[in-house]
Length: 544
Image 1 (cartoon, rainbow, N blue to C red):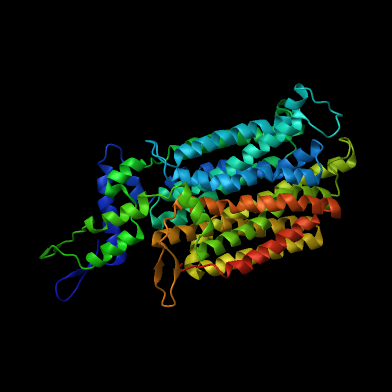
Image 2 (cartoon, rainbow, N blue to C red):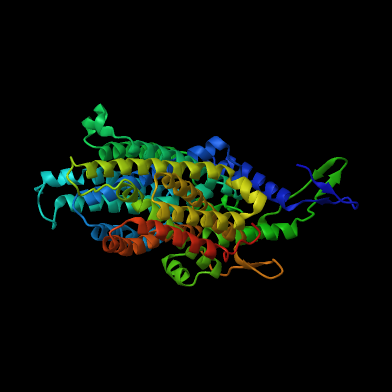
């Protein structure tokens, strides 16, 4: 490692070199433990990041199947738009309150297997169960006594289908937040941007595959006839992909058990406070200089207490609830921006295939199965799936260049312009109702989705690494005195999707039924993306 020697013979160590020395010390210490934890203190290769984030292939595959087929499935079993959208509120209402608490609990789990992986495994099992129930709810209901021409009322098929939807929605969204926390736990700070963009990129492959599968009429093939329907085939593929991704991610890197982390200071992450203490005490730390040899000693004993306080002692449930209502202003602005962004995203993804089938192809899902209107609707749904494949592909491709764009222009211009561009794309689709607009708005939504799945999480990581949520006029960090759990704050950010889904579920369906058109959802997507862009101008970006 190159160091700078002053005229007085002292060796000056830069911040980057000091961090590297501290990481090296922890790397060698962790490598010689009973189990090797050295991966926590080194950069990850591209292949390691792919394997670590492979669960996102299954998550995005689930989103693809969910957004393309759940609305048609619920409408096909006899639900109105109003009641159908109200069912979407069940799981987000549960998730909004439970998901951050689950993440807060994961900050304190003391199992030998780690803190995040046991939670991810439990959520993964719940997700798989929902995927197995949802596409077969109607068929299971018939075996339990439902009648094909039974009027709307209690039906086993409706209950099971909604149950499957709730299991999928709650588990996949909660898994989404916990998984991102696990990804960043396993990486050094310099890899946080890489692992978040890798998750979007690798997840895009799953979403792309899912939407392409949904755009094919599998009923005309032998395998489609064997499985029973397009929906059943796609959801069967989702189950397989989720299992593969879950196993790959959970076996990628081991976590340091919390009790061991509490006992061994050199197995703890390097906090901002600890680094600042080390920086002050070792700015020109020299033990001896002889000829060309310089021996630099890093004394970590002065920062052990700070590391222990900042990293290990995660807030309990009471502290979490108090922090929820007394969060820093920077987090409040970031959460509100994410909430508005998700309102725009949900208006698009939950009703897009229905919009294409009804407004662009002039179809009707409630028409007789052999009618022209029913055929046009299904053709529109498949065309909408093709558009959503463009959406996830553009998201994946954009994420490849996102890190370079941040270095070139900074986070703020990228954040604001991406949200604003999507607002324009959605407005074009609403005004024209033409097939070309399907690809225009899908492309712009892909850019927004890449942004909201990476940049807000990167900002929270930056806040926690600096232990600060604001800066003075002289660009000095203001130390945060609250003990905030990293996993809980990440999960709360993810829960903005739950909150947005509750509002969307309780309003959009009634608006569609009263206006008789689904074009309103595209206007909604445009409006909220524009408002999110405005809110993003107020986010505290610090020095990023």
